[in-house]
Image (cartoon, rainbow, N blue to C red):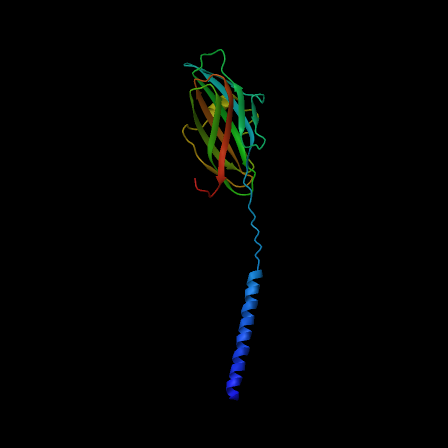
Length: 205
């Protein structure tokens, strides 16, 4: 009889211990919190400098001139270039060409890839076409500054047409963009906005 009582007492003690451990473990799990800090590096690309040549082309010739800062400006975030209030006067114009030479820099903290160039046009015209070519990357050296570049040099330096390529830039890397916009049957053009498009280097196209 004593053996039975002892086994019963032992069973009760073990059951109570297991129950206490289970309750304590459950309370521990219920109060467990995880603090996770995710640091996302910034992506950014700025337009550092540019030159724009406006060409008014008839059937036989083109008249070209550089556009000053009274016709151009960068947006406040340095992401886009705006050209405004342009037209071709005193000429039977068949086509208005905007030739842009631009230097951009990866000012963010992660590698990026320049994938495209977006253009929006407000004004009187029948259509437009765009070609661009990207050269780079350059870390601290740009082959030629834009200070002394004129329209003739910009036209002669344009790479082969119909080559719209992509370039990857590490942080602080630079690239040169040649952008040629052909605006057909152009009248008065209120605004042209040019925006290089970039993504993370490993993002899907």
